[in-house]
Amino acid sequence: MYSLNDLTMISGFSTRTLRNYIKAGVLQGEKRNGIWQFTEEACERFLQNPLVKDGIRQKRQAEVFDFLRDRFNRENRRCVMLNLVQDEDGAKKVSDFFCKQMQEREDVHFGFVHEAGHTRVTLTGRESEVARLLQAYDKHFLPLLSEV
Image 1 (spheres, rainbow, N blue to C red):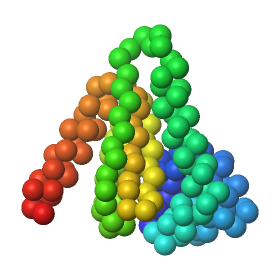
Image 2 (cartoon, rainbow, N blue to C red; image 1 turned 120 degrees about the horizontal axis):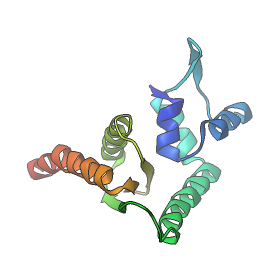
Image 3 (cartoon, rainbow, N blue to C red; image 1 turned 90 degrees about the horizontal axis):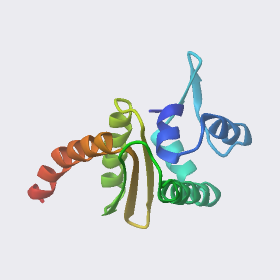
Image 4 (tube, helix red, strand yellow; image 1 turned 60 degrees about the vertical axis):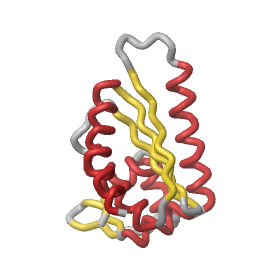
Protein backbone atom coordinates (compact mmCIF):
# COMPACT_ATOMS: atom_id res chain seq x y z
CA MET A 1 0.00 0.00 0.00
CA TYR A 2 1.10 3.52 -0.76
CA SER A 3 0.26 6.63 1.25
CA LEU A 4 -0.60 10.09 -0.01
CA ASN A 5 2.94 11.18 0.93
CA ASP A 6 4.41 8.31 -1.11
CA LEU A 7 2.42 9.45 -4.14
CA THR A 8 3.55 13.01 -3.52
CA MET A 9 7.16 11.89 -3.70
CA ILE A 10 6.61 9.71 -6.76
CA SER A 11 4.54 12.16 -8.78
CA GLY A 12 5.83 15.51 -7.57
CA PHE A 13 2.23 16.67 -7.13
CA SER A 14 1.22 18.33 -3.90
CA THR A 15 -1.13 16.53 -1.53
CA ARG A 16 -3.73 19.13 -2.45
CA THR A 17 -3.44 18.25 -6.15
CA LEU A 18 -3.66 14.55 -5.33
CA ARG A 19 -6.78 15.16 -3.25
CA ASN A 20 -8.30 16.94 -6.26
CA TYR A 21 -7.51 13.88 -8.38
CA ILE A 22 -9.25 11.74 -5.74
CA LYS A 23 -12.34 13.98 -5.83
CA ALA A 24 -12.37 13.81 -9.64
CA GLY A 25 -12.14 10.00 -9.54
CA VAL A 26 -8.80 9.88 -11.37
CA LEU A 27 -7.04 8.51 -8.29
CA GLN A 28 -8.82 5.83 -6.31
CA GLY A 29 -7.91 4.96 -2.77
CA GLU A 30 -9.28 4.13 0.61
CA LYS A 31 -9.21 6.17 3.77
CA ARG A 32 -8.21 4.11 6.82
CA ASN A 33 -8.08 5.75 10.23
CA GLY A 34 -8.14 9.13 8.49
CA ILE A 35 -5.18 8.30 6.22
CA TRP A 36 -5.44 7.80 2.47
CA GLN A 37 -3.99 4.52 1.20
CA PHE A 38 -3.66 3.30 -2.36
CA THR A 39 -3.02 -0.13 -3.79
CA GLU A 40 -0.18 -0.69 -6.20
CA GLU A 41 -2.72 -1.23 -8.98
CA ALA A 42 -4.52 2.05 -8.21
CA CYS A 43 -1.20 3.91 -8.24
CA GLU A 44 -0.22 2.33 -11.54
CA ARG A 45 -3.58 3.28 -13.14
CA PHE A 46 -3.17 6.81 -11.85
CA LEU A 47 0.42 7.17 -13.05
CA GLN A 48 -0.45 5.72 -16.47
CA ASN A 49 -3.30 8.19 -17.06
CA PRO A 50 -2.19 10.33 -20.06
CA LEU A 51 -3.06 13.62 -18.33
CA VAL A 52 -1.25 12.60 -15.17
CA LYS A 53 1.81 11.40 -17.12
CA ASP A 54 1.97 14.73 -18.95
CA GLY A 55 1.69 16.63 -15.66
CA ILE A 56 4.46 14.57 -14.09
CA ARG A 57 6.68 15.11 -17.12
CA GLN A 58 6.14 18.87 -16.87
CA LYS A 59 6.92 18.84 -13.13
CA ARG A 60 10.20 16.99 -13.74
CA GLN A 61 11.23 19.40 -16.49
CA ALA A 62 10.37 22.35 -14.25
CA GLU A 63 12.56 20.96 -11.44
CA VAL A 64 15.55 20.73 -13.77
CA PHE A 65 14.90 24.17 -15.28
CA ASP A 66 14.52 25.68 -11.79
CA PHE A 67 17.81 24.07 -10.80
CA LEU A 68 19.56 25.52 -13.85
CA ARG A 69 17.98 28.96 -13.44
CA ASP A 70 19.03 29.33 -9.78
CA ARG A 71 22.64 30.41 -10.32
CA PHE A 72 23.31 32.05 -6.98
CA ASN A 73 22.72 29.43 -4.32
CA ARG A 74 24.29 29.90 -0.91
CA GLU A 75 25.23 26.23 -0.78
CA ASN A 76 26.33 23.50 -3.15
CA ARG A 77 23.43 21.77 -4.87
CA ARG A 78 23.24 18.79 -7.20
CA CYS A 79 20.86 17.63 -9.91
CA VAL A 80 21.09 14.02 -11.07
CA MET A 81 19.06 11.99 -13.54
CA LEU A 82 19.12 8.23 -13.69
CA ASN A 83 17.89 6.73 -16.96
CA LEU A 84 17.24 3.04 -16.45
CA VAL A 85 16.14 0.41 -18.95
CA GLN A 86 13.93 -1.92 -16.94
CA ASP A 87 10.65 -3.76 -16.72
CA GLU A 88 7.73 -2.99 -14.39
CA ASP A 89 9.18 -5.13 -11.59
CA GLY A 90 12.52 -3.31 -11.71
CA ALA A 91 10.75 0.05 -11.79
CA LYS A 92 8.72 -0.88 -8.72
CA LYS A 93 11.87 -1.87 -6.82
CA VAL A 94 13.51 1.45 -7.68
CA SER A 95 10.37 3.39 -6.76
CA ASP A 96 10.03 1.58 -3.44
CA PHE A 97 13.71 2.16 -2.66
CA PHE A 98 13.51 5.90 -3.27
CA CYS A 99 10.18 6.29 -1.44
CA LYS A 100 11.71 4.69 1.63
CA GLN A 101 14.92 6.69 1.36
CA MET A 102 13.11 10.00 0.91
CA GLN A 103 11.45 9.56 4.30
CA GLU A 104 14.93 9.84 5.82
CA ARG A 105 16.18 12.77 3.72
CA GLU A 106 15.78 16.51 3.89
CA ASP A 107 16.19 19.00 1.08
CA VAL A 108 16.12 16.44 -1.73
CA HIS A 109 13.42 16.36 -4.36
CA PHE A 110 12.69 13.04 -6.03
CA GLY A 111 10.96 12.49 -9.35
CA PHE A 112 10.02 9.20 -10.95
CA VAL A 113 8.57 8.28 -14.34
CA HIS A 114 8.33 4.81 -15.86
CA GLU A 115 7.03 4.17 -19.35
CA ALA A 116 7.79 1.92 -22.29
CA GLY A 117 10.47 -0.04 -20.45
CA HIS A 118 12.37 3.04 -19.27
CA THR A 119 12.58 4.62 -15.85
CA ARG A 120 13.80 8.15 -15.19
CA VAL A 121 14.64 9.19 -11.66
CA THR A 122 15.38 12.85 -10.96
CA LEU A 123 17.11 13.95 -7.76
CA THR A 124 17.75 17.59 -6.91
CA GLY A 125 18.84 19.13 -3.65
CA ARG A 126 21.68 19.74 -1.22
CA GLU A 127 24.85 18.25 -2.69
CA SER A 128 25.75 16.16 0.35
CA GLU A 129 22.22 14.69 0.65
CA VAL A 130 22.00 13.78 -3.06
CA ALA A 131 25.48 12.20 -2.81
CA ARG A 132 24.42 10.09 0.20
CA LEU A 133 21.26 9.04 -1.60
CA LEU A 134 23.22 7.96 -4.68
CA GLN A 135 25.66 6.02 -2.49
CA ALA A 136 22.76 4.19 -0.88
CA TYR A 137 21.29 3.49 -4.34
CA ASP A 138 24.60 2.12 -5.63
CA LYS A 139 25.13 0.02 -2.51
CA HIS A 140 21.66 -1.48 -2.87
CA PHE A 141 21.39 -1.98 -6.64
CA LEU A 142 24.90 -2.49 -8.05
CA PRO A 143 25.40 -5.88 -6.32
CA LEU A 144 22.06 -6.98 -7.83
CA LEU A 145 23.30 -6.06 -11.33
CA SER A 146 26.42 -8.19 -10.95
CA GLU A 147 24.20 -11.20 -10.26
CA VAL A 148 22.48 -10.87 -13.64
